[in-house]
Length: 480
Ligand code: P53
Image (cartoon, rainbow, N blue to C red; front, side, top):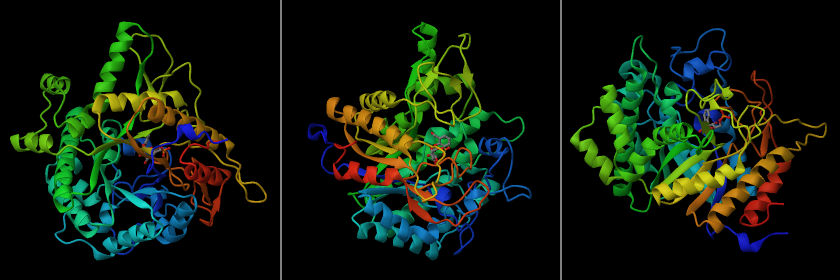
């Protein structure tokens, strides 16, 4: 039975979220240029590449590059958006491939074919009453800008990003109301090639390069916010982070302090975007370590005057922190390595499962920033089995989402967190950012394609499709 006392606010934006490089494919058509995300291979060297440790700025023999085809959203978007509409989506989060608009990144004039493609996508959304929520860059940096300028290390990228943002805001005025400037901006600290087009030089100070790149992205983000509001005062600009509260491994003060430091590090960029300046602990740390961001007085003023309208984030799990000498089991290898929380079970990919942590994270974010929040990613990456009749009975995905939506509802209804909407990650199966696999599936819609690129790309509905449709129709009160 639907519990109507626990409804989400009217106008709550339910939907799903994707990224250009993980679904569009069509990497070399209609004038598109090459980007970091294209030359990121599936397989054993992927982590070294996304971490900026292994230089790969072009396709190399012996590797498979899943983004070349993705799920070919480029040619299937009408069909896919029709399916989203059937589920009742109020919003669809997607991103722009920078290299469709500016193939090299530093041209004066945009590529009309790229602009026309996104215009069609937005018009298709609007024809169903679906509000696009658009990430300007989701791990996306033109290869030319990496080769010529060293990626986001260079301040020159600020100008190129401004040109991109101005072009988009002008062209799509009236079509797009919600924009995010950079996907998971704190990912620069963990996967710097993916987050900022950084490949480390030998002997380079990694942290110095990462913080400089982050600063340039923060300045670019503030410019985009300013420009967007000048072009159309109605648009709302958000920042975006990979969130998840840090739990202290124990109540030993050293563990609590470790959690505090991790929290401060991850939230530092959102502090700048939401509050307009770097926190003191960060400034002290940069000074101590001789990290020069290249910050000017104009930067400081721009950041202070152009904070975001709302805060968006992805939530997959909480994290755990421990002092270096605390004895505990530690996980390694993925973007967020650290102590394993003994109270939580994990997904097939070792990601902790923590719905209550979602309520905790929502409260922490709202307490800290006091601005509207938007959950723009949440979901379970899992292996699906297609039955003989073609059905996929993904009860595990329904269970995951139900528990998380319940926790989110508690945060909104019981705790009063101001939340604009919720988009699940990968409403249609797409390429995994972390692993490059297709088999790590998040979708309500199954896509026939495997990790090696075989399959028809045909779309079909999973069991979760009708479930999510019911959730949206009841505005989150019927989660059965
Ligand atoms: P996948 C971890 C590693 C890489 C990207 O991740 C990540 C994370 C989680 O914080 O961030 C987001 O595909 C990202 C999406 C991505 C999604 O998490 O490795 O914004 O692009 O697909 C899920 O399972």
